[in-house]
Image (cartoon, rainbow, N blue to C red; front, side, top):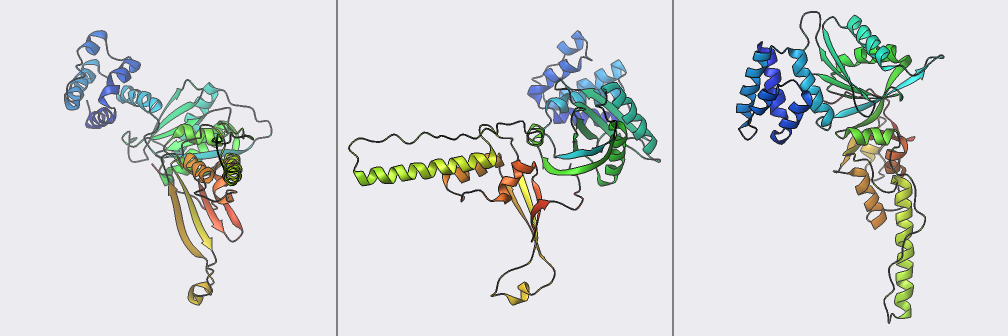
Amino acid sequence: MGDSMKRLLQRLIRRIPTQMLKLTLEKWGRLTTAQQQSMDFTQPKWVLTERLLGVCEENEWTVKHITELEMIYVMGNPNQGMWNAFQLIDPEDDFQSVELMKFKEQFKSHLGELVKNVSVKMKKHTDEAVWIRIAWGDSFSRPNHLKPTYVVHQLQTPYVYVTGLALKQKPLLSQALILATRYQALKDANLSGRNLTAIRDLLMRQYQQMFPTKYPSPLAEKNETVSNTHIEREQAVSAANRCQMACEAFGDGMLPQLQSVVYKLETKFRDHTNKTMSEREEPFRCVVKFASNNLLESLRHCASSGIASTPVTPLLSSIPLKGKNYFVITDNGPGPSSQKRQPQS
């Protein structure tokens, strides 16, 4: 077994939690029944790793088999890195959805023409999405399997989700995807996050957007004074209006779990008490980031509870409305970034 293959397997086993290792190996299906039973999953991770390295040499597995195991784990646990969304645009005049086998053949062929040393492995998920694992090399080096790029694409949609992509590799991946899918361009969707499902649901509007029109009022207590009744009724109406506007802005029910939104400000500095800054010709620049375990749910709660003012500002309602979480704010108003964003791994 080569050193690179050994490091690949060691790193992969370290990534997989011990409680998930047994099930992941069973899904892989490469171990014999005897080899599977010989694995004691109560032992420390390093002992299990050494045992698997021995089995790997015994079975004469190759890098192909190890990357197969990695794909099984990543596909079952996709929320491990930063995913960036892209959108294929301008389909050809005679465009039809590409079949899976044809897409596989054309994508590998086109990418192979662009990159001399590249390893591509594809697998279809149960949700009909095509998962692509790419190990990049160049004219002077073999594919680096320790730093792969993962691409997820549902052939019936124009959306592509990517993680682990270096800036220099982006044009190569873009061209291969365009040629294989018969679109004319690939643009940044300005949407990223660690929850792949949330990004997909937000782009494809796969969440509840039904806006309730009636909300239950608080139960009236007995022996209330007339003045208290009027006050509570007014408060109940105000609370219902806030809930209505919050749901109109962000949706109802469970929302996609975005972790952050970024606003890049490029606006004129306005403050009559600071002439030095306000008289500058170039725009004032800064970056504002909001973060939460569930950003959309947090924003909806702030609006419905009165912590944030209603109606909701377009700066926030544009997140679900436009399916983006990266905006550039200029004097003309909020809009998607006009600059190329570097993919994050």
